[in-house]
Image 1 (cartoon, helix red, strand yellow):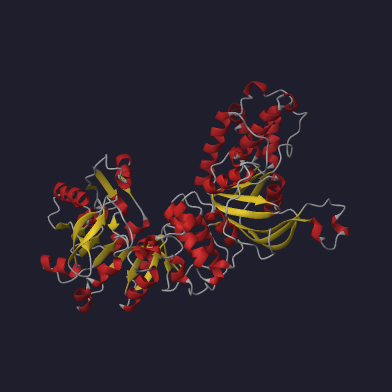
Image 2 (tube, one colour; image 1 turned 90 degrees about the vertical axis):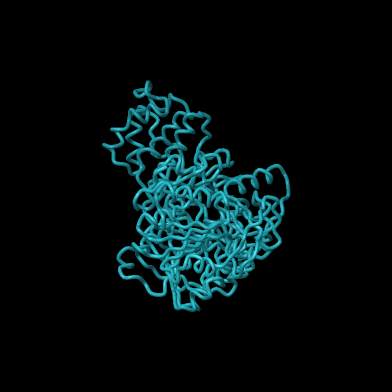
Length: 593
């Protein structure tokens, strides 16, 4: 099937539709693929270049490099992958695309290989898998000898932890002074499974004169300088390794200094809430065993509580491949110098203490806040641009107080809070609505209250009334249509007519209408695509109208846990059933909860 890779000439790719392969599934619905790592690789490929693709899979990199006029050696230990790639090479008439079905090692041997689609790997230390097969292993030097190649210009490596063995098997290539540009997937857990680590891989590259630049998949077009001892924030990251920056690299990419401290912390916490258990496991290792400056972040304790109750036993127990914690690899990692709050973070809250609001008359009389008025202690969390986040707890009023702080109300007692961008709050149904006016008039009234453009809101009036099932009651007084209809109307205006960086939804009455709940979920997904973060408060996770990326569980005046939504929701459910579930043992800096 025809596919264009990162804007390169179209090539024919061969797939097995029934193999359950994620990349093949993508190609069944798309005739293109475009990721930052592919662009970084293809920019290094020139006509006549000698290219080595280690872990070639279906040939996305090999075929596109061949289309650009390079000679390519594609290597994969999965026999089905090399069979399909050989067929694709023939279909494309790429006579200088060579395919080898071998594993990579530092010396010729036979290894046990687990052919698990894009996650295929040499059997890890202590791993048992009845699907493992015997595969011939060889060195890169030997493969190049067989082809009569004496140099390489570009290497792509995605071999799930075997990178160190592959580099050792290039000894003669490097002795000749060859330093090809390399694009490498740096997989912390798989490196650990082979007895190595990310810092060890970086150290070997540095000793050979390479500079390592993170290919930032969250910000296409950005490369980040990556010192040997810096924390790899996700389990798997793609890096560009060069001995000198190619001419024009800074024109094609924005090259930034190492990630600032807040960004390191928030990215680790984002990974701790990831749907992928492997990413949560890596974050658990980092948060438990990583550098002290990472542990000092206020949000780490609640994240550890969530990880200790994770739905995956592997994450709860912290059993990385090879039986070692990736966090130990970074225990002495240097603390980033910058503490600036930058994109994509919209909210950075650190050790907040919050009191209930005072009336305007009380404020001038109060010079200090008595301890008994502080109802929330040590609240630390962040929200990224476009994040849907839920706040749950037995007392939803606590969540509403957090929203009040984010909305700029005078409720903060201490701590650091940064809210970047425009925040809009719908914390109660009654705010902004007038019961005696008509349903139709209240659409414009609430839209104006929430900061919407009134003519634009009025132009959407019929659509909004249709969504909430009140098209036939536009002229009826609002007070006559029922409480749930009023709640639906308020939510519809907030989700449809407000343009904000942060939309705050308080603990509103439960909506039973399944069609409307589905509509809100779809609109929340649209806001996420438009980079609007949504925070919703609810007594119970089931009451949330959004699909949150993470849940904050507030109980007893403190943030009890913060992380993977499904795991936190299950912990809340078990807690309310009376089950005592062991946690991480974390306690806040203010003492026991």
